[in-house]
Length: 156
Image (cartoon, rainbow, N blue to C red):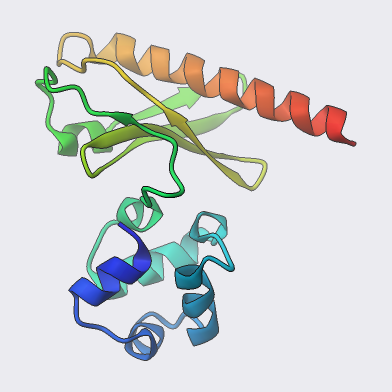
Protein backbone atom coordinates (compact mmCIF):
# COMPACT_ATOMS: atom_id res chain seq x y z
CA UNK A 1 0.00 0.00 0.00
CA UNK A 2 1.12 3.52 -0.59
CA UNK A 3 1.56 6.07 2.16
CA UNK A 4 -1.46 7.93 0.79
CA UNK A 5 -3.76 4.90 0.87
CA UNK A 6 -2.71 4.02 4.43
CA UNK A 7 -3.20 7.62 5.53
CA UNK A 8 -6.63 7.79 3.90
CA UNK A 9 -7.65 4.45 5.48
CA UNK A 10 -6.81 5.98 8.85
CA UNK A 11 -8.89 9.06 8.03
CA UNK A 12 -5.89 11.37 8.39
CA UNK A 13 -5.05 14.48 6.44
CA UNK A 14 -1.52 15.20 5.31
CA UNK A 15 -1.36 18.02 7.83
CA UNK A 16 -2.40 15.69 10.69
CA UNK A 17 0.20 13.12 9.62
CA UNK A 18 2.87 15.82 9.51
CA UNK A 19 1.95 17.02 13.02
CA UNK A 20 1.79 13.51 14.53
CA UNK A 21 4.95 12.23 12.86
CA UNK A 22 7.10 15.34 12.92
CA UNK A 23 7.81 14.84 9.20
CA UNK A 24 7.59 17.99 7.10
CA UNK A 25 4.20 18.47 5.37
CA UNK A 26 5.90 19.18 2.05
CA UNK A 27 7.90 15.94 2.29
CA UNK A 28 4.72 13.94 2.87
CA UNK A 29 3.15 15.67 -0.12
CA UNK A 30 6.22 14.88 -2.25
CA UNK A 31 6.17 11.20 -1.20
CA UNK A 32 2.50 10.86 -2.03
CA UNK A 33 2.74 12.63 -5.37
CA UNK A 34 5.83 10.68 -6.42
CA UNK A 35 8.21 13.64 -6.50
CA UNK A 36 10.33 11.84 -3.89
CA UNK A 37 10.66 8.09 -3.35
CA UNK A 38 9.73 6.93 0.13
CA UNK A 39 12.32 4.16 -0.27
CA UNK A 40 14.96 6.93 -0.25
CA UNK A 41 13.79 8.26 3.10
CA UNK A 42 15.91 7.72 6.17
CA UNK A 43 15.03 5.06 8.69
CA UNK A 44 14.02 7.67 11.26
CA UNK A 45 11.53 9.22 8.82
CA UNK A 46 10.05 5.81 8.00
CA UNK A 47 9.79 4.96 11.69
CA UNK A 48 8.07 8.25 12.54
CA UNK A 49 5.58 7.87 9.66
CA UNK A 50 4.87 4.23 10.50
CA UNK A 51 4.34 5.08 14.18
CA UNK A 52 1.95 7.91 13.36
CA UNK A 53 0.02 5.72 10.90
CA UNK A 54 0.00 2.67 13.17
CA UNK A 55 1.59 0.36 10.62
CA UNK A 56 4.90 -1.41 9.98
CA UNK A 57 7.64 0.38 8.06
CA UNK A 58 7.47 -2.38 5.43
CA UNK A 59 3.89 -1.43 4.65
CA UNK A 60 5.00 2.09 3.78
CA UNK A 61 7.58 0.74 1.36
CA UNK A 62 5.13 -1.55 -0.39
CA UNK A 63 3.74 0.12 -3.49
CA UNK A 64 2.60 -2.11 -6.35
CA UNK A 65 3.68 0.46 -8.92
CA UNK A 66 7.18 0.70 -7.48
CA UNK A 67 8.08 -2.80 -6.29
CA UNK A 68 9.37 -5.63 -8.43
CA UNK A 69 7.80 -8.73 -6.90
CA UNK A 70 6.45 -12.21 -7.47
CA UNK A 71 3.17 -13.72 -6.33
CA UNK A 72 3.22 -15.59 -3.03
CA UNK A 73 2.90 -19.29 -3.74
CA UNK A 74 -0.39 -20.84 -2.58
CA UNK A 75 1.54 -23.90 -1.30
CA UNK A 76 3.38 -21.88 1.36
CA UNK A 77 2.85 -23.32 4.82
CA UNK A 78 4.63 -20.48 6.59
CA UNK A 79 2.62 -17.45 7.67
CA UNK A 80 3.35 -14.04 6.20
CA UNK A 81 4.22 -12.85 9.73
CA UNK A 82 6.91 -15.55 9.96
CA UNK A 83 8.24 -14.65 6.51
CA UNK A 84 8.41 -10.97 7.46
CA UNK A 85 10.27 -11.75 10.69
CA UNK A 86 13.09 -13.58 8.88
CA UNK A 87 16.36 -11.80 8.12
CA UNK A 88 19.35 -13.00 6.15
CA UNK A 89 22.91 -11.74 5.94
CA UNK A 90 25.30 -11.29 3.02
CA UNK A 91 28.91 -11.80 4.08
CA UNK A 92 30.04 -10.48 0.70
CA UNK A 93 28.28 -7.10 1.06
CA UNK A 94 28.00 -7.13 4.86
CA UNK A 95 24.32 -6.18 4.86
CA UNK A 96 21.08 -7.73 6.02
CA UNK A 97 18.19 -8.48 3.73
CA UNK A 98 14.57 -9.25 4.47
CA UNK A 99 11.37 -10.09 2.69
CA UNK A 100 8.64 -7.61 1.96
CA UNK A 101 5.15 -9.03 1.52
CA UNK A 102 1.97 -7.26 0.55
CA UNK A 103 -1.08 -7.71 -1.60
CA UNK A 104 -0.26 -11.40 -2.07
CA UNK A 105 3.21 -10.62 -3.43
CA UNK A 106 6.78 -11.04 -2.12
CA UNK A 107 10.22 -9.62 -2.81
CA UNK A 108 13.65 -9.46 -1.20
CA UNK A 109 14.48 -6.04 0.24
CA UNK A 110 17.88 -4.63 1.17
CA UNK A 111 19.64 -1.29 1.27
CA UNK A 112 23.15 -1.02 -0.14
CA UNK A 113 25.18 2.13 -0.72
CA UNK A 114 22.17 4.26 0.27
CA UNK A 115 19.96 2.67 -2.37
CA UNK A 116 16.98 0.42 -1.67
CA UNK A 117 16.89 -2.76 -3.75
CA UNK A 118 13.86 -4.96 -4.30
CA UNK A 119 14.36 -8.32 -5.93
CA UNK A 120 11.45 -10.53 -7.03
CA UNK A 121 11.34 -13.85 -5.18
CA UNK A 122 9.31 -16.91 -6.14
CA UNK A 123 9.46 -20.11 -4.13
CA UNK A 124 7.37 -22.37 -1.97
CA UNK A 125 8.31 -21.50 1.60
CA UNK A 126 7.86 -24.24 4.21
CA UNK A 127 9.31 -24.59 7.70
CA UNK A 128 11.52 -27.42 6.49
CA UNK A 129 12.83 -25.47 3.50
CA UNK A 130 13.21 -22.11 5.27
CA UNK A 131 17.00 -22.38 5.91
CA UNK A 132 17.65 -23.14 2.22
CA UNK A 133 15.19 -20.49 1.09
CA UNK A 134 17.13 -17.93 3.13
CA UNK A 135 20.41 -19.06 1.51
CA UNK A 136 18.76 -18.72 -1.89
CA UNK A 137 17.57 -15.23 -0.96
CA UNK A 138 21.15 -14.25 -0.03
CA UNK A 139 22.43 -15.53 -3.39
CA UNK A 140 19.73 -13.61 -5.29
CA UNK A 141 20.43 -10.48 -3.26
CA UNK A 142 24.18 -10.73 -3.93
CA UNK A 143 23.60 -11.31 -7.65
CA UNK A 144 21.40 -8.21 -7.86
CA UNK A 145 23.99 -6.17 -5.95
CA UNK A 146 26.78 -7.49 -8.20
CA UNK A 147 24.82 -6.18 -11.17
CA UNK A 148 24.18 -2.86 -9.41
CA UNK A 149 27.89 -2.41 -8.57
CA UNK A 150 28.88 -3.37 -12.13
CA UNK A 151 26.44 -0.85 -13.64
CA UNK A 152 27.63 1.92 -11.32
CA UNK A 153 31.26 1.21 -12.07
CA UNK A 154 30.75 1.37 -15.84
CA UNK A 155 28.34 4.32 -15.74
CA UNK A 156 31.14 6.66 -14.65
